[in-house]
Amino acid sequence: MSKNEVDRSKRRFLIAATTAVGGVAAVGAAVPFVMSMLPSERAKAAGAPVEVDVSKIEPGMML
Image (cartoon, rainbow, N blue to C red; front, side, top):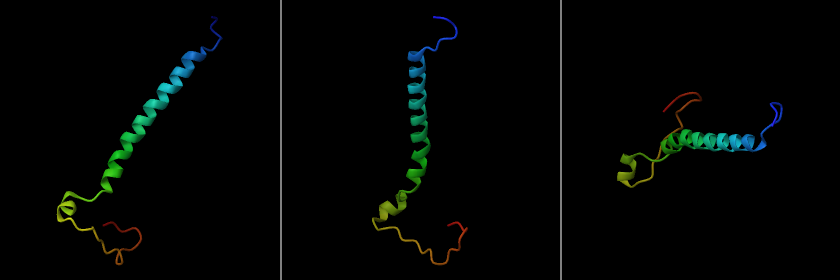
C-alpha cells in the first residue's frame, strides 16, 4: 500500500470507536440533569406529590 492510499477499514473502525465514545460521554453528561428532575428523598419519603407555587416568580428568577 502506498502512502497516498486510504485504509478504509481503519477509517471505519476509528469512526465507529469515536461514535461509541461520544455516545457514552453524552449519556454520562445527561444522567446528572435527568437525576436532578426526579423528586428529592424528602419528597419521596412524604409520599405526596411535589407542588411548587410559581405564580410569584418573574422571568429570570431562580427557585
